[in-house]
Length: 214
Image 1 (spheres, one colour):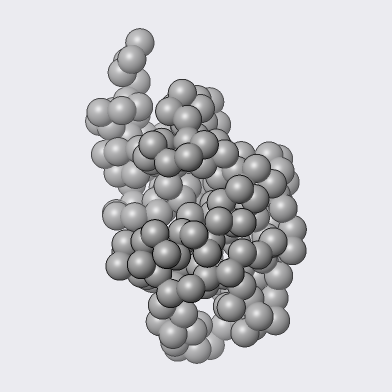
Image 2 (cartoon, rainbow, N blue to C red):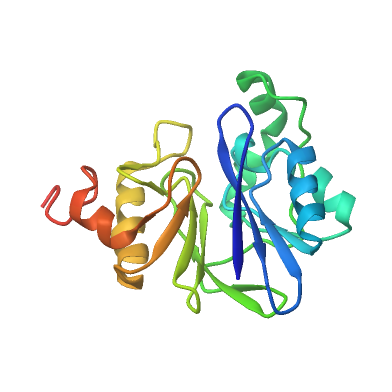
């Protein structure tokens, strides 16, 4: 599988283009904006977009989802139903953060903990990881030892929980109970900034390293 990160919006959010190299089928994860950049990369790689995947409903992750899905004629899958609160507030979010106007929408498929999503020959497991937002999900490829974690975890930090319906205790539980058991060798793509591994964060992350808060 080929993974291309496309930082979009003034928040430099890591939109991911995931390509099944066997079939040339692709998924776009968290297209928050700058759709021209995303479409150019899809065309450059000459791949077929099969679906749009969303980790959560903050505007820098999902503002372009409906437009992009309509452009390619594909479904939107994710996040978890508890994220309806944020998707319904997209018009308010666009005003608050100075984004182009964004309409509320509903994904074609809400995702639950334990679901899977597929494109081409690739399969990702779905983990409901609330805390940053109530309906946040993480996508995990067991075959490639790769997780797309949105704003749950960053290299050296964790997601904010001061937004409405954020919960710090839930976030810590999501990381320690859902992510860490997947393995120290897992490489993860965060919503912002560089990639890292779960093992590195367990050793050095000042918020969730082993022993912190014990």
